[in-house]
Length: 341
Ligand code: NAD
Ligand code: UDP
Image 1 (cartoon, rainbow, N blue to C red):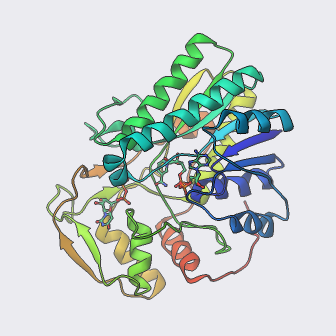
Image 2 (cartoon, rainbow, N blue to C red):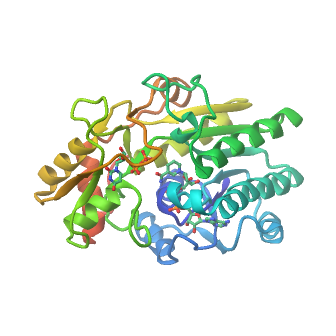
C-alpha cells in the first residue's frame, strides 16, 4: 500500500515514516523543509534500511500535489504538514490559516480527482479548548479555541467532515494528539525546533544542556496537586504507531469520519516532568516560577477507551522512556537502532 505522508520529515511525521516502513508500507513524503532538515531522510533509511520516495515541495501548491499523484498510485494520505506554534499563530494568523487550510483543501481536491479517499489528519487536543471535564473524551465539545493555530485545527476537522458529507465514499480519521515528547530510541530523529522552543520538552533539554539558563515554569497557582499545569505527555513513537493503526482501521472497515484521541490517559505536572527528567538522566534542570502563560489551561488528559476499542491501540511507553529518549536525542547519542515492536 502506498501512503503519502505530508510533512514526513518533521517531528511526528519522521517517526511515523519509520513505523510505516517497518510495517511494509511504501512511503511517499512531500515536505517543503520549512521546519525540518533533509538529513532526516537519511536517518529514516539508517533506522529502517528502507528508502522513502521524497518530493521537496509545498502541499499548498496544486501542481506539486498533482505531480505526486500522477507519479505514485497513492492509496491513503497522512497529513502532518502544518505550522504549529501557538504563540506565533497569534501574530501571523494569515500565514497560519493559509498554510493549515490550503494544504488540506489542495490535498482533498487532488485526492478526489484521483479517487484516493482515505485521509488521516493530525488534529490536536487543542480543539477541546478549556475542557469542562477530564479525562477528555471524543464527545466533549470542540471549538472554544484560544488561538488561530487551534482554530485552524477545528476548521480542518469541519472541512473534512463536509467533504465526507458531500461524498460518503471518503474515510477520514481525525487523530487528536495530546502532548507528544520523546524521540526514537536510536537517538537519530527527534524534535529540534528552530530558535527558543515554545514547548516544554525541548526547552527542558536546552536548559539541561546549558544552552538556556533556566526553565520558566508558567504558573504554580493552578488547581492541581503542586500548582503547575498538568498534561498528558505521550511518547512520539507510540503516537506514530497510532497512525499505522488508523490505516489498519480504514482498511478493515468503512469509517466515515471518526475523531480519536491519542494520549496515555495519565496527567503529569510540569514539576513532575522536570523531576523525572532530572532523576532519570542524572542532570539538573534549574527553574524559576513565572506567571501563568496566556491561553494555558490547568489540566488536560485524554480518555483513551476509544483508541483502545476502535484502533486496538494503547500507549506503551512511560514517562521515564519519554524523558530518557528526549535527552538521548539532544545529546546526539546514537545507540542500538532496532528494538522489538
Ligand atoms: P513539524 O513542524 O516538526 O512537522 C511539520 C512538517 O511539515 C515539517 O517538516 C515542515 O517542513 C512541513 N511543512 C509545513 N508546511 C508545509 C507545506 N505547506 N508543504 C509541505 N511541507 C510543509 O511538526 P510536528 O510536531 O511533527 O507536527 C505534525 C502535525 O501534528 C502538525 O499538523 C501539528 O499541528 C500536529 N500536532 C502537533 C503536536 C505537537 O505537539 N508536536 C500536537 C498536536 C498536533
Ligand atoms: N510550560 C512551562 N514552561 C515552558 C513551556 C511550557 O511551564 O517553557 C508548561 C505549560 O504551561 C503547560 C505545559 O508546560 O502547562 C505544556 O506546555 P506545552 O507548550 O509543551 O504544550 P501545550 O499543552 O501548551 O500544548
